[in-house]
Amino acid sequence: MRRDTAGSLFATDGKPHPLQDTLLGVTLVLGAIAFVTAMFHNLHLLSSWTGLVGIFTGAYGQFISVTTRERFFLIVGLGASAVGFFLGMAHGGLFGGLW
Image (cartoon, rainbow, N blue to C red):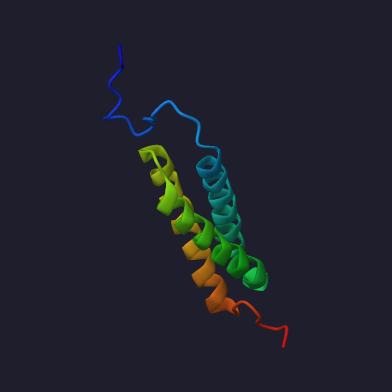
């Protein structure tokens, strides 16, 4: 007998998704780093680069995601990465101060 989990945010299909889960974890970590470091003006290189990489990993993760849980947390990581990226760009950009 199959349990109905269609209404749950954490619903899964019961199968392992190692690539999707790895991209989810990487996107969340990069998003958190980008978001936190964006609050400090002198860390704009770290926030802009981690934000940019987080946006790409999150976008690819969304493209291949299977479950609602993956999509939900990828969007959270993507949002944090985007905020960190844009604030990092506003504070000096990807190469600001190097050349």
